[in-house]
Image (cartoon, rainbow, N blue to C red; front, side):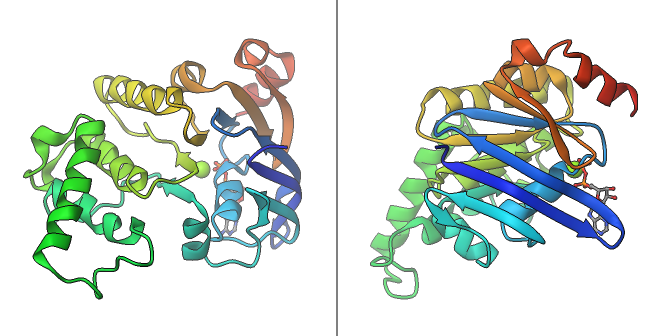
Length: 249
Ligand code: ADP
Ligand code: MG
């Protein structure tokens, strides 16, 4: 049993079958990639995992509990965190302040901003955010204005904002989209180090095959809303069905 179990998921948009009988099992503390041509249904599947879309049928189980029927913030509290295709950060705040915001949410119920609006509490949160920034090699940029950073740094910051919540499952939708090569390589290294701690499960949607093959331990190929093959990267490379799916792009 994987930490994430998707069974028989279907999703239609009017006459279009975006997902058709999708099964997916993601093993705990591994990195699983979902690849496939444009329009294959990758983002739709991710949206079904985080409560942004509700499948027409099928089941989505996370850590033994159904996510279906739960609101996005409830799914987030279950331990699923998502990095969006375009970084979602607070452009007017500093890097450190950006990480402090989700820290409040990450604290357990006994420690809430509204209940403990003390100087000590803020210092605590500041420490927690700073430790996170050190962890992703961004401590030296703590006081920088978030909105003026490079795309790669914004992405790194967004990851810090997700990781500080200590999710069990991190979902990444094209984390290197639109990035320069150097930023892509830095992102690969960061994700590798997160993967190798073996404390977090990662599910990544990615177009860049270099990124996929650097990170993924298992790969599911989605084509026209249906899983075509699922295997280890070596078996996916050069798989005739995969080549066929991509040639049609
Ligand atoms: P991918 O992320 O693999 O590129 P998507 O999941 O975004 O693919 O889209 C799968 C298919 O569903 C595409 O044909 C897309 O046009 C369609 N689609 C996605 N979202 C919607 C929506 N909200 N309404 C109608 N059609 C949609
Ligand atoms: Mg997409």
